Length: 423
Image (cartoon, rainbow, N blue to C red; front, side):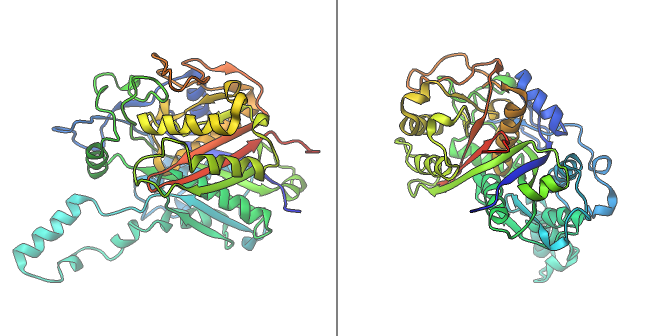
C-alpha cells in the first residue's frame, strides 16, 4: 500500500500579495491584481497590462545566509515563497535527515535579456573579437540555470534527497507537485518542498504571446476587467508572475512531529494531447484523460469532487475545451460542482499557476469558501456550468480537483482533499 501524503505548509508571492494569507484573502475578496505593466516600456505594444508582483523585497523576506546572489526575478519569488512555506510548516534542517528531504519545482528556463545580447553583439561588431562574450562575468551563466533557485531552497533545509526541475510550461508546477507526491508515496523522501515560480512579464514574452494571439488586447484601459475566464467576452489571457511553494510530507512522519496538516494530496494524473502546440482540443481530449486518471488515483468517483480549481485561462478555446472535458467526465454531476479560476484575479502565473490552484484548494477546504471567477458579466451559453460568478460562496469542500494544461499539450490533474484520519 502506498504511503499517504499531506500538505503542512504553504507560501506565496503573487499579484495579490507577498505571502500566502494575503493572497488567499485577495482571492476570497475577488480582488484583481492586474494593472499597468511596469517591468518594461510598453510604448508601441498592443498589450500594456499584466498581473505583476508589487512592493516585493527579497532581502526583507529571506535571510541573506540562504544565498541569493544569482537569483533573477522569477527565482526571487520562488525562494521567498519557499521560506514562508517552511516557516509555516515549522520545519528546518533538523526536522529530518538531509537525505530524506528534497525539492521539486516547476519553472521556465531563464534566458539572457535581449539588451545583454545586443551589448555583446555590438562589442563583437566593434572589436571584431570572437571572444566578446568573455568580457562578461562567467557567473552570469548561473543566473540562467533553472536549478539556481531550487538549489537555494535545498540549502534552506540542507536537503540532499530528490531534486527535480520541471519545465512543462503552464503545467510545470502541477507536474512538480505530482512528482513530489509520487516520491513521498514510494518512500524516496519524508519531506518534499514543491511548487513553482515564473515571471514572463518581459519584452520578449509580451511580444511573442501577443503575436500568437494568446493575450487579450481589449482591456488595456480597464486592466481589472481583462482576465475573464469562461465569460462570453473573453478574448485572451493576461500574463502574471509569482511563486508558490508547498511543504509535502509523508503522513506518519508528519503526525509524529505534531505537524499542522492543511490538506492531503490524494491523486495525480497526467496526459498529452498530441494535437496542436498552442490550442486545446475542442473535444476535451487530453484533459479528459488527466482528470479521469487523478480521480481514479485518489480512489474516488467524479461525483465525490466538490470543487474544481479550473485552469481557466480566459482564452476562447481553452475554456471551451476544459468545460467540454468536465462535462464528459462528470456527466450530470457537472451541473452541481463549483468551478472557479484564480487567473481571473492574478492573471496567468504560467509555470507557477497550478501551484496557485493548489493553494486555492487548500483555502477552500479549510475555510469552507470557494473564491469566485471574476468578470463573469456575460454568460457563455456554450459552457453553462457554475463558475461562481464574481462573489465568493460558502461551500463545504471535502475534495477538490486541480486542472493544469500547457502549450505543447501537457496536462495535469491533482486531487487535494480534507485530511481525515480514517480515510
